Length: 417
Ligand SMILES: NC(=O)c1ccc[n+]([C@@H]2O[C@H](COP(=O)([O-])OP(=O)(O)OC[C@H]3O[C@@H](n4cnc5c(N)ncnc54)[C@H](O)[C@@H]3O)[C@@H](O)[C@H]2O)c1
Ligand SMILES: N[C@@H](CCSC[C@H]1O[C@@H](n2cnc3c(=O)[nH]cnc32)[C@H](O)[C@@H]1O)C(=O)O
Image (tube, rainbow, N blue to C red; front, side):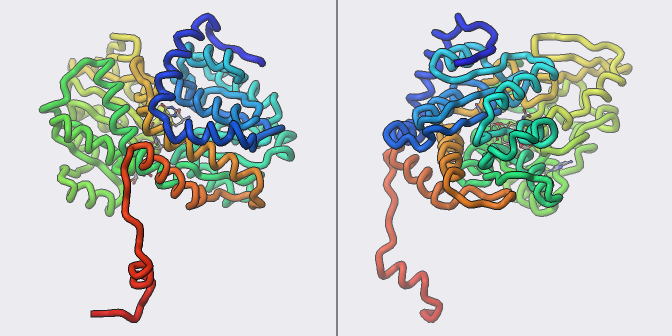
């Protein structure tokens, strides 16, 4: 086994965290037990580039139980939990990465997992897939395909496929219902506030929370902000989503107007320059800024730096920017996704990643036999069906089945009033 982690002596602490999340990941545990018997990945090498924390290590252990050689690295320089990687390295996983990597180190560790010459890639944000295409094209011939975890990664890969630049098939794990309806919505909703409240220790009730982007993540964040007693304002560029936000009960306006009221402003668009100089000019004094979208480009930190007469590191992940007129804004976690890169960011709850990673484990197996073109495919419906049924079973929830009469009725176009 090969590893390059911060401190291998942290393994016992990491092992306890892994044991804990395993108790809350029944679907993945079920698949792990099945893979243990079937060994579908015997002789297969899998490289992953995912947030390295206990739940992700549990995905690695599931693939390992299935007979794979597994090499793992992180998909964000700030989200790795060093005790979890140490534990993973002692449990049979090739492990590379540590918290607070430089950009150079981040790409070096991706190269290290690629040195294992993988057959299957599991990526989050598509950095590893791009690196293979740009710098390690000799590996492409051996690669059966990849699974991509997140919305922005899929947008980028679809653009690549359209340009005929994608050289192996990709399964869009994010687009499975059992992923985005739960992970992006309830996962991001909870973990974003978990991290912000943990590091700032401020009250949410009574505050005005501005949510930029009313996609699946934005909906989850707005819902939780509302539940915590905040006044929620949504900003959008899509008229349908803006209408939905309005009818869900929130105020909707341009971001240039919303910043005047924001006590806490959260971006979840996957876009660039959502909040920039023109917005900081009118922003409410004391506004806390955080991002839960893909990259640290949604809130333009460069503009904040340019405008600030004073920049102070107030806490490990809270930076203060004092404007000429005395107003001060606070940026969390360097504008990187706060639910994972924040000082207190633990990522999504285990019960949520249980489903996302079950889809990953089943999609990786799907790549084994499937004859696919170099395109982006939605995860097969059977995977969604299986994961949702296993989850309901684990939650002791039973649902009804269609009777033959009902099936016939629903399929019949002739029967009317
Ligand atoms: N933090 C996490 O753990 C986590 C989890 C899942 C997804 N993500 C990431 O979060 C981002 C959002 O994911 P999603 O699944 O909600 O995507 P989505 O496509 O469902 O939603 C994004 C929304 O942002 C809107 N938007 C785009 N540009 C905008 C702008 N300039 N101003 C206002 N609104 C704008 C779009 O119209 C869309 O409604 C992606 O980058 C995704 O990769 C993060
Ligand atoms: N490389 C990008 C990745 C985007 S992260 C967004 C993805 O993180 C995933 N995620 C959220 N919480 C966790 C977690 O606790 N463990 C592993 N992955 C997580 C989630 O499925 C989502 O699609 C970046 O760092 O900006």
